[in-house]
Length: 169
Image 1 (cartoon, rainbow, N blue to C red):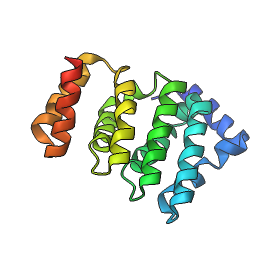
Image 2: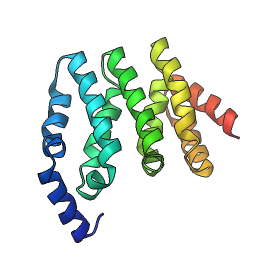
Image 3: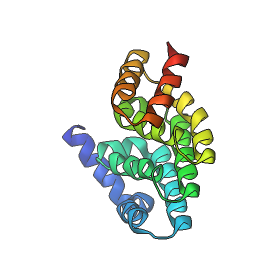
């Protein structure tokens, strides 16, 4: 939780920056839109905003809703949106490498579901992304989380988790 001074400063920056001022509406539209093209574009816009303004978003408690929307894109009914969400997560990881390791408990299961997707293009696109992002996670935590998934998740996820475990142990 950011300090009161940081939160106040972040709120001021949010109010003074048009892109950040419209962020809440963009997130809401991303959740409501029935157009895959619009959802895809919104994911791209949100990830760009996260890369440019991560500290302000964190200090104003807006970062979580942005990342939730991108992670939800991995489970969208559109393959194109799934692929865009993967690309967005990877871009965020490249631009802000310290961000996703702090969210490992949320990010790893979402990426694992994408990597074990029944859709070949999503599953194959997720493999290099999950490997790259996982490389920034603490190995001890990755192994623990993957073991938990092997024990308690659906078969398709178990297989993917076992393959990842075999590569990291």
